[in-house]
Amino acid sequence: MGKLKREHVKRAKLAYEDVTIPEWPDDNGEPGDAKIVQLPAGELIEFLNLTDDPTQKRFGMFHIVQKCLRDRETDETILDPEDLEHFKEAGNYAVYSRLQKVALRLNALTAGVSEEIKKILREAAIAVSPIVLPDKSERSTSIEKSST
Image (cartoon, rainbow, N blue to C red; front, top):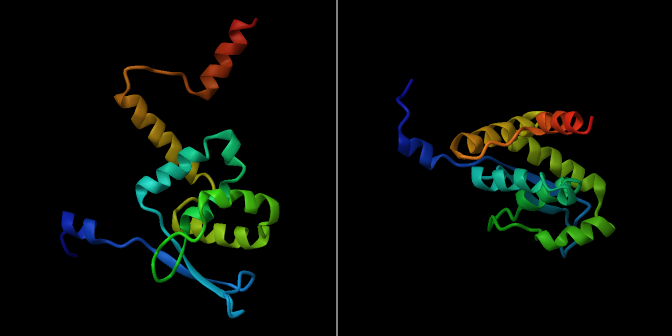
């Protein structure tokens, strides 16, 4: 077993998976080809923070697909955040659901994992912050006690 070095970590590539989307054909009528990518840590944290926003949380399916669906050759995102309106009005739920499953798997966001990541991030923020706020369960208990 070899010794792990910093340069080994820094040159590691993020995972991706090629996807074919027959429901979204190209200009020639051929099934659409793209890839779903594993997000860099910073982008994944941005996604998790976005899903904390109650107005955006219900559209988490769109947001993870928007961030992870990339052109196979250029690695550019295919969808823009502004495409949320199209998703709401005419998006193919079955296609987005299929792509979301791949994105969640590649980004290790299976059931419970995103909550665990949020807890770790919250604990890290508390550790460096001079302000200490009660967590959600303590707040509801405090509110109940104060109203009695």
